[in-house]
Length: 319
Length: 238
Ligand SMILES: Nc1ncnc2c1ncn2[C@@H]1O[C@H](COP(=O)(O)OP(=O)(O)OP(=O)(O)O)[C@@H](O)[C@H]1O
Ligand SMILES: [Mg+2]
Image 1 (cartoon, each protein chain N blue to C red):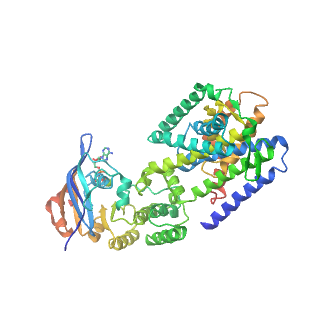
Image 2: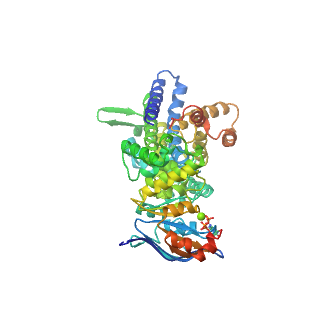
Image 3: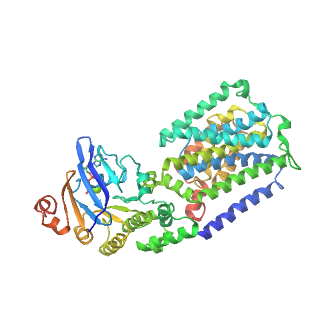
């Protein structure tokens, strides 16, 4: 039991150390990509908490990512708050939206839950278009340069500097990874997994499963919001594409590819899918088709994903 | 003996379409007893205890537990008040280890890694699965899954432990072990046992309730029930 936990902890720390070291050897192009991937992998980690550990398949996570993105972006753009406050507002936006949606959507399950989350997310997407006066809709807006530079004590940060950007992205990912690691190894995580396996039975052990599902969705929303906020602040762009259905499907794909219900799967899935799309889009603009095909193939022939398969075959201690 | 009523139902009924699965049952249980409910297939036993533990909503009637009306309480809240139910059809968490199964049931009561480890080990030992902690429950033989199911029930430290056909599919040796276990449990909890195996019923139960067609046909000590002609006709007839 506990040797497994220690081994898993060491593995997670080694992965984080490796990611830290990579910034010194990667060429510019990949350095920039990896910063972006780390933010998206954080988003995937938030998605995985709900799908992988609680068994709830949402088709509306784009609204949570976008809540963070717009929460941070609009606060910086319109209210002129600094980047740190913008980030906090983004996290809270994701959290609050997740709780509000959860109070309604979690009364359903299975396919109905997928449809309800999808509809909420489409409504959020349309909202970003409707308020184009503030959001500039599809076209989006770029954050002012000054908002991305700020001072904490005697430290000066410039988020447009690639090195700073990379390390903030890594910090976000490390926080999300370790938070999910601790959560899934905790008694609460055990209950979430039990709900995934058999909700009725979990109820008969004295758990009010609705509360736990709401908690999982809230945590997932906060992490998705954090990723969205970081995306806005680090890459300086806020647009409604990020609220579209595409950004609800992508985390599903990343998580399925990397291994649903594994803490490190979302990272692996995001890296692979990012570069796959990168390569393919050099040849064709129909990369969404590829996303669709990959999704179907994964579900049909490779449901455990990469790390899920490794865990089943060789490393049962993987969290 | 100054019996204290732990559980009582009043006019409890459940209809499925035209089927009166349970039909106006007044059933009472004293604190500390081991009670068996027997009756032919489809008599309404599972439905009755389902309404007691909150898995099934009654069509009519009330349930009282420790002098409180719990009819409106959800199943999880009844579990928290001390009513545990083990399923007729084994439904342990097949994808989780035995350790995690029992830990799930125990962790609301026992906090901290070490204490939980110890408690789970104790409970697994109590049902004879001490060496199975790391095994995924789904691959256990059926009899062991039934024992694990009982360990889950015990882990809740219930005031009332409801066991729905716990010995179904167990070997003779396992049944002996089970009977010893239940006698041991009865020191701490009231036990309500639905059971088809008459040897087990006669050995364990202090009182027996006989159900037929959704109603209580007879109730009494084992020897009274054995001697009851109505019961012999309806059930023990063989
Ligand atoms: N969910 C349901 N829908 C419709 N009918 C049901 C349902 N559950 C039980 N019944 C019916 O209610 C009656 C009582 O069933 P119940 O399962 O309570 O019997 P039982 O005494 O537990 O039988 P057994 O010994 O076979 O377990 C049966 O006629 C059964 O077919
Ligand atoms: Mg039954």
